[in-house]
Image (cartoon, rainbow over all chains, first blue to last red; front, side, top):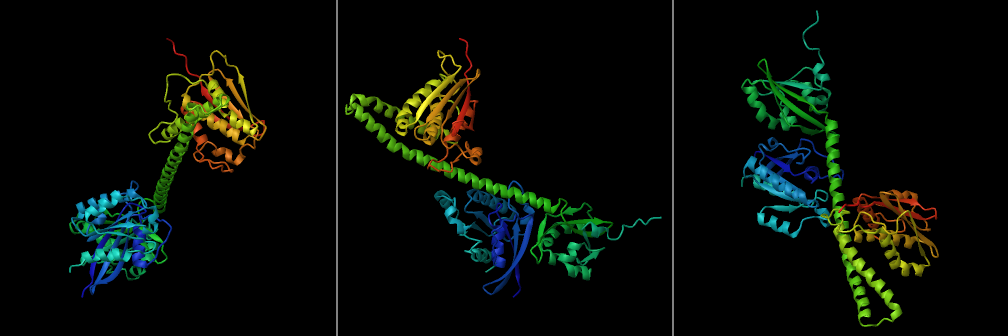
Length: 167
Length: 374
């Protein structure tokens, strides 16, 4: 069975944990130190889904903010994407929702998953009942992850990968 | 005669790797490889021909979508990619960009560092984002404290209403001996004032209020009268402690009083904060000296006590939000901050000096209202 290669982009504003999620998924490591990403960093992860070998190309893009905007050219050729928000900073969820619209406009309707990251700091989360209601109404696949503890990180990437592979 | 050929080692010294694309879409390394390429892709430097850079730098596969048409169609305007980061085995990050161009029919791929100095760019971006995160954190902290303040003020209102109500009942039901009635009236006036103060404190610290904005501009408050009334109100507390208020005046014409720019209720709150502070820190059986001085265009107020004064290393933050003395008397540290934003909002100034009495001297200066012709 040949290896299927799929490109996945990590989208979100700065410091939500995109790089940390990739590092946790690919290398099983986490660092507390914040180091901003410039441009894009590409990592590979091989896995198997229902006996099918898959190679995921993880495009860890720079955070989208007023200091640096994400170029849509990075999105070109993506098979899917992970939207990442930081539960302790509510505005990051708004950015994620905006980036989703841009991604859809660029790529069309490709599979994606929304990750509410930093679940290890849930006591500091800023999401209110109305936010949860709104998110549930969207009908998206949404996971609460922690790149620090690894909670649901592997699951998040696998869920997306499953949607990218023809059944 | 000098050669017109480029000196060897030029590209290497410019940190540029130049590869030429062949018809089979493999690449050949031209010239000397720069040090970073030797570090990141040593096999290419050894092999030099039939190279596929996209196998080492995955990002290039993406770039070829744009570069391909340029190479295939004889276009000459170069295309430069977005930046991307390569991480070496030591974890060091290399920021790179690629340029595709066609020169004299030859398809070329240049790999190099971005035009802007990568380390400077990274440093600026890193710092900007860190500051942005810190700003967000501080904003959250301020919000939390404002909520705390509102809760405290709100919770104080209830017992105060009970005290006020009880005092009124004592008077209304004639339960107080005649000689005690003035004291009950003092209590009622003070509780009424405190309730008014709480309402205004909430307004003052609300986001939408302008600090120091006068609420009642009909009449300039009389600073002298306000001081007299407050010292009378605080007299019972002072007496319990054996502290005496001593008021000195200089320069004012008694028929004109001591009018200042401002608003009566807030001015009373400023005075209450300062006088109550002085009373709290004054030692038993001492004097709190209050001075009013007519300075011409302004009036200066000062209050001095004979207490321990403010430690030198705490003076700089006296008038800031949430500044508490080392004694941490349980106050939330907003009184002097409120005084500052109020006085400064009225065009005045406020400050602290060590007192000749050995304790603290707090002062403020307010402009006199300008006389309007009728």
